[in-house]
Amino acid sequence: MVYVLLADGFEEVEAIEPIDILRRGGTEVQTVGVTGKIITGAHGIPVTADIEINEVNTDNAELIMLPGGAGHELLDASEKVHKLISFALTNGLYISAICAAPSILGKKMILEGKRATCFPGYEKYLYNAKIVSDKVVIDGKIITGKGAGAAADFGFAILALLKGQNTSDKIREIMQY
Image (cartoon, rainbow, N blue to C red):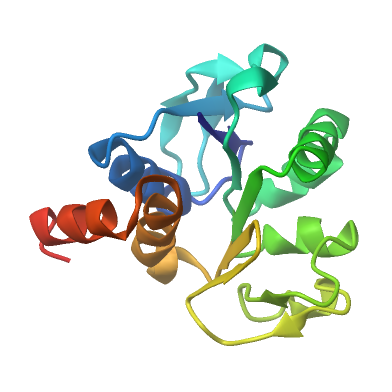
């Protein structure tokens, strides 16, 4: 299961586009409301989360996704989000973050010595990471994305990790990407 953590102010494209790609590729995805059941994105689009953060079942988790936007600050302020990230690290799950959200991982020193990318201006929070300008960077179990314009590439990269490159390529072709 992929859990996409949503907090008010999240960047809609960075969450919804990867969710769409992953579901088209046969991946189970649940949206997780960190600030309630109905979360309003950065551009005023309300989203009803599948579950709230207290309902996450870590027994079936494969990947945790952190979208960016102003909502990343609320994700970073949540003790429950940090516990979930720590669980993912301890149990060898994938952790993905895009735009400003890689700063959450950077502050936890998770990116130390790893290649990573983020929205320009947030590099200062990726403490001791090897910062690259690629749209998407995979280093071990950590996937980082640059921003809204990289959301599709981010989704396809995650799909390739979870379901194989052939599945990712097939969905990319179906979507005319």
